[in-house]
Image (spheres, rainbow, N blue to C red):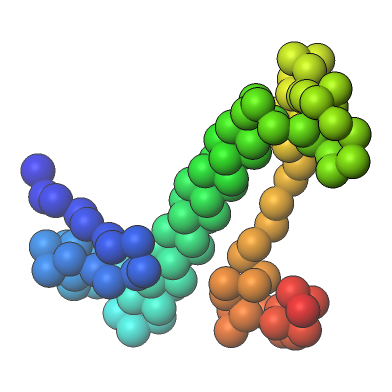
Length: 119
C-alpha cells in the first residue's frame, strides 16, 4: 500500500511523486514527460473539483443555517418573514440541482480561451 497525498492547494506528497515516477518507467504509449504532464493535469482537475464540491457544500450549510435562524428574511417585513420549511426545502432542492463547472476558471491553461470564457 502506497500513501498518495495531495494538499488542498495542489502540492504532491513525496510517496505520490515516487509512485508517478515508477509509473513513468512502465509507460509504452507516450513519453514519460507527456505522461507526467497528463497525470498532473488530471490530478489538478480532480483536486479542484473536490475543493469546489467542499466549498459548495459549506455554502449550502451556511445558507440553510441562515434560512433557519430567528431573524427576518427581508428587512422591513417585521417578525413575520421567517423561512418556512417548505421554502427551505425548495431552496435546498434548487441548489442541489444546479450544475457547476469550475474547470475553466481553475484550469485556463488547458484549453483555448478558457480564461476568457470564465470571465
